[in-house]
Image 1 (tube, rainbow, N blue to C red):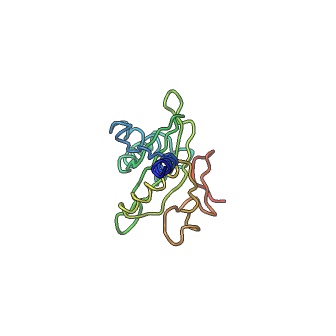
Image 2: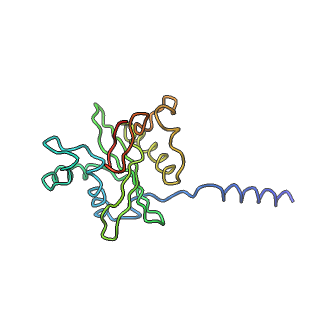
Image 3: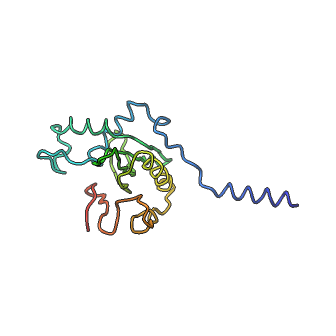
Length: 184
């Protein structure tokens, strides 16, 4: 009887755990496809080019070389495509700092049949961190995001001095209509 109860307990315990997702981009896309994916979203997660670009003109072909360079220098850390064809991603880019530091953007998007992005949302932007710390924290946040778990404990106001998520915060939110971070 004890063995039966113990085995029943183990079965319940393991069946309640969330399945670990496989979000290694190499398992989903070729290297070329990964570069194409980064290029398709770089105009959202990167800053505008310094000369005469606006959010209204950032898709103009005159800015292509800037965005190609930015896409190539970014890292696609995670990519997961769910059963509903929602693409969940985490991408990192170099942040201004005396030491090499990066920030990560975690979000999701949907494409139409032609491959055009029809919805795009950034869920979080991390604080800038050294690469190892960024990788560890992004792994945690990405897994929780894909599993639709609450990320608010990792907001700066709630994280007890540990830096995970810079945005959103009490003043900054992601506007899915304009596809950019805005202040209240």
